[in-house]
Amino acid sequence: MSQPSSFAQVRRRQPCFIEIGDTLLPDLSALFMGRVELQATVTISLLCPFSGERLSVTADELQVMATLSADAWTSVESLPLKTAATRQRLDRMVELGLLVSDSNSAEQVALRDGEARLKQLGWHGLAAVYHARTRWSAIVGDEGVRDHSEAAHLARLEKSVTKNGLPPTHLPVHDQALERVQLPPVERRGALWQLLQLRATTRAFSRDAWLRASALAEVLQATFAPLGQRALGTGLVALRRASPSGGGLHPIEAYVLVVRVEGIDSGVYHYEGAAHRLTRLQAFDEAEARALVERHTIGQTYFSEAHALVFHVARAHRNFWKYRRHPKAYKVLFADAGHLSQTFYLAAAAQGLGAFYTGAINDADVCQWLGLDPLEHVVVGANGLGIIDPSRDELHLRPSPMPGSIDGLQAPGLADEHG
Picture (tube, rainbow, N blue to C red):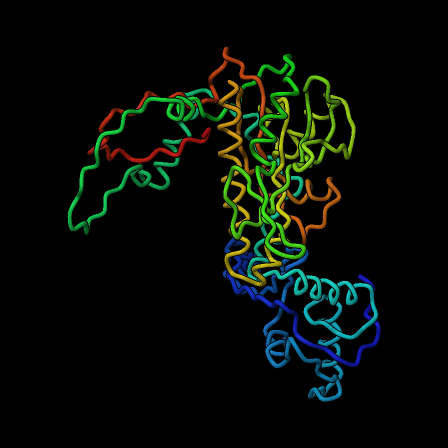
């Protein structure tokens, strides 16, 4: 990092969230005496809402930060800088990004611009920190290499039981009920119930088959295209999709990674729902497309068998336009993706196709790969689509139908890792 330029004014970071924790470090005095012991050390960190980094803060620096305003500049001359060491501390805090100054260094200019953009876009401070701290880049899990047999899955569940005890029950009953009213029986027949029975998570696809372009088109249109519109005022139009959206804003866009679809070259596309068309952003061959699926889904190799992967990318600034710095606005983006994913599943099931959804993605990498601004766009997750391989079911949950009455079913709720 370059040395900061001279500065005359400083202020506190905005937002400014401090985390105080305990870190286990080797006890040096014990180490010198030939013993290996760990000692709990209190750590103080500033959580950066842009990079997601923990910036180390000393107790003395925290005291300085607590005396400064985040909204108004404080003249350095007005601070009680009694010694050269105190001025050096202030220089260090500006250099590390613990404070904002009027310096013209590249780092400080970027810091001021970043804070201004957060405010202009309407981010809630806690949501901005959470968003930055939970983005993944270059994460590789073990899902692609571990044993997925039923016996191996059961062994992992039993290991969790040994560590954490039995899971909470699937179907709890409230222990303070005043009365219980038995509802009329429902006959699970008709198109809706048949479709719900077909809806399932698929992780084994016929990778040598070609997905029809018309099948992909129908799923995209059913899930992401507007079904209607209504003018509300000058420049204001409400759209309706098949899924609900917080505030009627529908901020989530579909970015389609085509792997093996008839008549559509492998590549990544933006689905323009109003015109019902794909706009290609990058081109590559099928092998590279499969490698990209695996890379962006943290090494889940079975997902690379899918014929297309659809990233849910929320335009956060659209939600925040209406709900500025609202504590619930960020959460609603994820709820919207859940609604869309269910519609995606049903549209796939209606055509006899397999679908899946995963939130285990390298979202920071996907955002950069698509050339999107991470302060404006949130990569929430991805749906997959493809032709089911009926010869393999080791990754699939194939339950027996529920009985007509499930009263009294209070077995512990097993956490099925395969949806």
